[in-house]
Image (tube, rainbow, N blue to C red; front, side):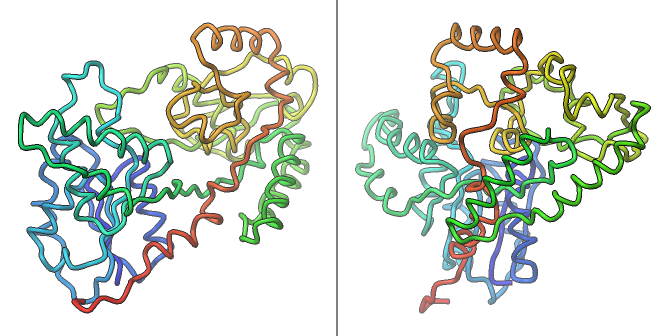
Length: 376
């Protein structure tokens, strides 16, 4: 158990990452968490809680934590943990996270993250935008201090920083993907595997599912099939989630992510399978507009991304999927609603394979590899 995983807000993407690392590292790690409630209190007091609850061990070599934790406080309260190689992962940063008004940004939370970066050995961000928006905001942020301001903090922190995208273990989407999109997905992933030399997700399961879907088509000709609920994710407490209601109302549409002929006693979906798989009726059905919260997953599952030309989106999506003004967004949505076949026939021109655990797993393993130190 050489890796100590600490998550002060164990929910949503924070939980997803820690669970993935724990599963991959298996016997080589210990996971300590706090529930995903009252985020602000966790950010301010978690270090004191973990001081008392993290078990002492001489086997620890690496401490991996998200930036919710005040790493400086924990290192001071537990000198034994302060000696470890400390890796801090930023899902988001408090210097650039949107607030309604500037005066609503609480100084202490951004200040905590700066202190954590100064103490950490490696600081990892989930995007270049996240990293640059944090680093370039430090100077302006510290000017809020009335006098005796520290200097050159960005220069001290930047050499420790790197970008490592959030790893996704993509689900098997072959059960509900249209045939032309599934064929395209298999082609892209196969080509990427050959070019980069990494092991992509096993497509044999998807191919088997395609065969199963074709074989079960005759069994579903009545048009009455039942589907299990789809994948759900959570979001930080207190963080804004615009357009949540429309997305929630379309849970039955998202639930096609599992075998349409499996039973589930919580939710049922009725549809004509032959019309969904192909044909004019499928192409002309009304569009469903969703706010997925997890874009890299939504696109993989066949959604057409339509994102603002701002924040992290230009880093992830090709230019044709971005809009600059609300008027542009309205016009594009209007056009898609008039011609839903444009979206349904569209083959995504970006790539998602690079965000998979298969592509990023090796980098995370290297990050969590212990480096020999005399004081360990």
